[in-house]
Image (cartoon, rainbow, N blue to C red; front, top):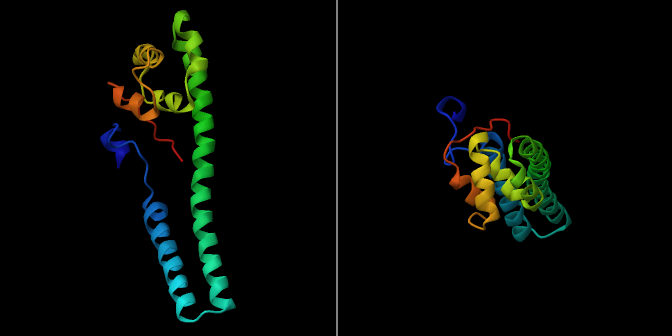
Length: 146
């Protein structure tokens, strides 16, 4: 597991196999099977079954998206508080110019590295979340992700 090995850019994404693998596969099979059943035996019951299967699939995707959105909002708040504490005065105005993705990317940088990364973002060298993450030299792990 990543916690024992240490987290890096390559290993920081969290996959929960019971959710991302097994549950997703079961839902895909359910939707496919329901579509085949509707094709083989068109009717109200098989139509309702396919509708339910699609509803379960939408529930799967929205449940994940809602959790990620809340997590991103918390990270954005945490990083704004952290930046207010560690950035020099000349970089403080840049905090309000950082996009949510840039703030989320910065969470993986150690404090000593953040000012330089913020300067690079302000200069237009780093634009998105992945650009910021790839530019980090010393990775600060985050094991509390949804």
